[in-house]
Length: 265
Image (tube, rainbow, N blue to C red):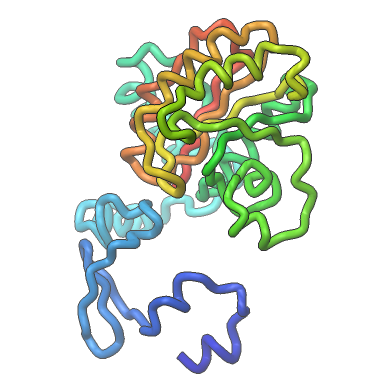
């Protein structure tokens, strides 16, 4: 571990908990330099839902590289992008009568959140964003501002203004917080500036693991038509979350200027 400790930045997280140098990986297993096998429960923070070096994915990638497929194109139109867009449209969007446009950002959830917040603020000409307790959306500037956990917020001293936090469904035991959310968003004397967007996670994996709260929160947002805002489904790091966010999308909601689903990794 010496080169990592002496030459790599101190800005490291997971490696501090795993004092091993990993060499290869297959499926759900990691192998260190001595050949010891580890079950990888981390799985790239949920990104490796098909496992490490899945044979079908590896074969497709190698074939693409072998035929000199484009690996970096900025936002140029490419054949690979065309295939992906058309496939996503036919398999995910069209069967659910969803009408979305694609914006390709960087690969992380935080990249998607940053782009979504910027777009929502541009469309509405507003600054404030409503987020929820125990939310986690990433550690870059804008994403960190809508993240609730003080453990992460204390890492950086950037400006985290223009965000209002409301209690996520189930935050108070035995108390239905949805009427409170609805009242805060409809009462013009609530102290909450008219938001550009409300950003909500379909699964609060970093918080409580709550899955059932989104339909209730959508109902609360549905009666807030007077404030005409965007709804942003926060970063979704795994295929399970991505699927759920798409199934729960409500593009016909008249209280919304737009619906933005942020899919990371």
